[in-house]
Every structure is written in structure tokens, then in C-alpha cells.
Length: 404
Image (tube, rainbow, N blue to C red; front, side):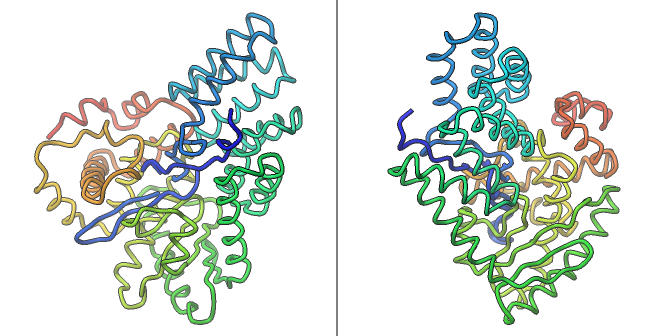
């Protein structure tokens, strides 16, 4: 691979799950979105899908170095990654590693597969093992930094990219990413915090203390209201950071229409929050729902279900969605809303959010919040969506989509 293509960026394919996930857009006239962040994102080298480059590179040039059977398994694993079949790839890499445990490529592949399934702890372990075997494996170093950032370890992410740049000093994308992370770390380092039992809200100074206090009140109400409906609550305190608009854009790289972002941390631009308390309530409730979904399933959740839950539960009033879909010709297939909304235009995003919210409202009415929470748990455990949906909702997904 060319060195100037080594910088990993997470393309939020809101398609936004490995960085911040752009969140719902502004209320009216535009509407909701969410970053994955990370968590439905594509991993790219300098704007090109790294799975296509890295997979082709390793599967086509290096397999002759290992025994034929293991080589065949590895080739299948890289092919599965190229096809977006992360679970199949993970299984194949696991089998190949059992036969060839000191092969750094295999651990890199296992880390890639785990990252696409949002098993960040497993991805980190696999990538660190790859680097222990081959410290010069820059692909592993770049992805490790992104995983560390996604896990909230900004110091570790910065350290990884510092090391990456010692090996690829001309990589401008890696340098830009490192600079951005350093600005984020410096900003967070000078922030103050407001803390309660369930949330930690970071803000920059005394002028924002009142907003932070109001944010805690809003989040606490959302915690009990939404948690009771789904019959579950986050097991760990949820981190929230309040930014200026400029700071938010710089750190999250969210699209212009995004009103907030969630990437393991709820990130919110304040934008005169105290003058619009209903908007602060809506945005924070929306993002809290994403955090709750993430606590149940870090992988396997279609974007329409994730965003639909956030949209349906943020206020309970879906008049905006009904009006938007009333202006839309034809039906929107949920199957087209699986991978994220990040690359959509503002108008397309409004339709995607509206269709998702209305679909989830119907799910809540038909099956209830407990069933949806169990569906999310099944997805987090790796059960395929069609099987989990049929088991928990008691009808096939095709039948649900076809219903008026």
C-alpha cells in the first residue's frame, strides 16, 4: 500500500458507526440525524475503502508464505471483509489464527472484522497483538488509533498516531487527524464537569454551567422515561460534552444538518440552548436513546431501527414525521436504510428519519418496548436480524414491511 494512504478516517455513513456519528438534524424545516457512529461507518484509507485495499493487498500477495489450507482460509476471510461480511470474516480469521498464531496479518484482519462488528475491545486486543508481532504494520497502528478514540481513550489514540507518523511522516491525513485529536484533548482538559448518578456533563467554563445543570435535568428525565418504556437502563454513566458550534464541527466532522452526535459520548453544540429548552430536551433525549441502544447492542443494529427509536422516543410526538411522509411520493423501504444516513442530503435525511421513526412507532405499538429491547440484545449477541426479528416481534420482517 502506498504510505500516503495509511491514514484511517471513519466515514460516517449515516452511515455514521468508528468516530462520532452525526445525529438528528434540526427540527423544522429539517429533521433528525445521527452520526455511529462509528458505529455504521466505513473504514477508509485516504478516502478509499481500506477493506478493499488492505484485503486485496494481503490476500493476493502474501498467502504463499503459509500452508495451503491456512492460506485458503485467510483468502476467504479477506474476501468476506471485502464483501462486508464481518461475522464470517471474524470466524475465518479465528480459525486461521489457531493454525498460524504468530501471523500479524491474521490478527490485523481479526481486528478489522471486530471493528466492523463494533466489538471494540476485541478489535483493540487483536490489533495490539498484530503490532506486538510486527511493530511496522502501519495499517494496524492506524486502525488501533481510531478504535482507541472510539473507546474514549483519546490519549492512547494520540500516542498511536504519533507513532504512526514516525513511520509515515508524509501522511497528511494522519497528521490532520492527530492535530484534531490534540485540539480535542486540550479542550476537554480545561473543561469543568457536572456529575450525577447517571451522567457526566463536561462544559468549558462558568458561563456554560447553567446549561450543564439544565442538561443534567433533561437527561435524568429521559433516563427514567425511556428506560422504563424499554425496560432497561445503561449500566455505566453516560458521558456528555457541550461545545460551541465551531468546536462541535471541528471535533465530530458532522454534516451541516447534524444537531448532535453520538460516538460513545453524547456531543452537543449549545446554540442558545437556554433560549430553546424544548430543543435541548429533544436533542438530549434523542442522543440518550442512542446511548441506551449502544448499551444493549454495539453491533448489528440497522440504522433505521437505531435512528427510529431515537426519533420516536425523543418526544413521543411524530406529527413532524407524518407531515414529512405525507409529502413523499411512494413508500420508503427500510431495507434501504440499513447502513446509515451520513451521506444523504438534508431532504433525504428528513425522509429517512421520518420513515424510521414511524416504523419504530408501529413496532412499539405492536410488540412493545420490552420486545424491542430483547431484539437489540439478540442483535448485540450476533444473531442475524431476520431471525431475531421473527423471534422477538413474532412476525417476519418482510411481513412487517409489507403491512400498510
